[in-house]
Length: 483
Image 1: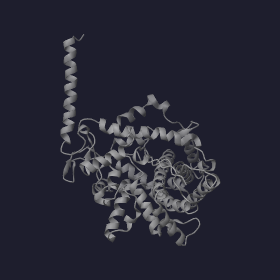
Image 2: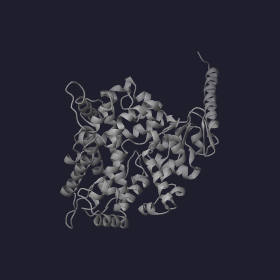
Image 3: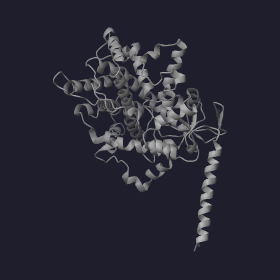
Image 4: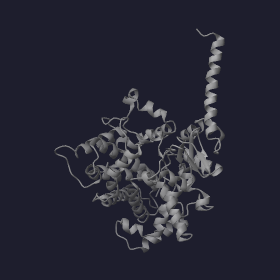
């Protein structure tokens, strides 16, 4: 039995070991600037993540300390576009870190977002690329058109205001209804019906609003994923037998995918059909169609919310956009090809993506064996290097002194080379190289259409704008923008 003296020595020994380990960790990256406390503890990163401001706090850290910043004992972030391209290109030896474990929906099976092995990830992407590109989906653009038409019908039926009738609309909610219906229509062949019911079908949105912040916190503390995804807590995880939430969507995915396999399999020329044709197994198809819903709806909705909020609160931008729409011969509904030829519309979309990048995760990668030298700093192997989207997109060195201002005209300024460089930097919103977003083309079609179809038929007026965009984030943009 320990005496009081023995216990005191044991406590001192434990403290000494802890201090030694923390000091060793601090020394490893002491040459890289950042908040002082971040060098010794994950507490700085945890507090910023838990507070929902990690996207802005990391951007402010880059503004203060430079384009490479230490935010944890073994964690760095960068806002340098050249460093990001070096890290993300197809031949890069960098690999996904354990940050991505939090994106594993099935604890025993990885998906295209959680797969950390570069070779396995590349094989998985190759089976899905054609389906996402629309080349093998005959009805991709038509599906988007039909769901945007449903949105317009809903707005006209329930949310038009007159001189005597006041019907405000929470457009942030309707944007997510739209993107969920689009992606479910594309993924499963039938929309979930959010716009038809004007309601949170399956309570999916409420469930994800509760779940996503936890996933982001787990990304900051990867060891938590081993606990949450353990057999002990399996009963608390979503199940395909659930009536509501993510589990209900899992059940839908399982049922729809099962129809595409077996002796009586259904053959359709849609996104899922393309996945199956290119070799996805039934289990992989279930996982990937579910991940489509999670990754493809909220991010695009965030881009719509933020962009429409800035359009509707800037009469100059709105009037110029409406003028371009009115003076351009376009179809009804507008086609993707027509939208791409409208310069001011494209500038508005680009500026919306820049002012509020829809993906706010840090997405840490592991520095490869032998380490790397970045902007004059030697970075040891196995250091985590993350992506600071807001730091990149609000950098005055890249975008000018008014970088924090929504001003689409910046996309017409400078030489042709200047504009190409800005477009290349903006494209990092969708990732790059081996990790570029598979859903990029789908999101671009949605954005190309929605602002024309929403802005032109009605007169937009923002009566309440909650700029939670700058104060709270788990991939959330402003929650209210009301026509």
